[in-house]
Image (tube, rainbow, N blue to C red):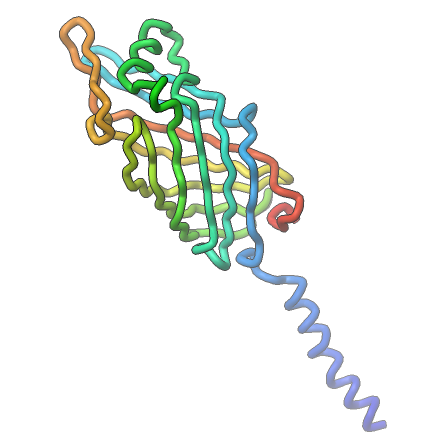
Length: 206
């Protein structure tokens, strides 16, 4: 009888333990993906006194791993060919390649080295949240630190990330071209929209 009573007393604890394991927090998941260039793009927006324009690249390359429980081990490398940006104006695009010396410095590269989840949890469609990301941006042969907040969303077997930030041309020693007496604005606005399949050995999609 005592054995039976003891087993009955332990049963709720055992059930609670199993439930606790099944309900492990979203922080236990990691997100790893290779960027799909067919589903990703990066826009830049340039300005001049009389107008603005946008160039787009659909040749984004890279990989990233986000580890909410060990953010210091998270990493990202994103690379874009400078010559792949298309603004719809071949003369302007040719000028852009000239001033950025695309032949000598063919890629824009970002390497993320410092990650911190600001918000991260599971919603109706999957894990999502915002990450503070710091790293180095290399452009025109110059490298400078960059910090931004990146939104990340996991839906099914796909992860999407988006970041928007400003780049100063003079900071990267890029000549600001002139046209009809007007000089192109120093600030270029970047809008990166990245997507890729989640690596099969990660658990973020489960």
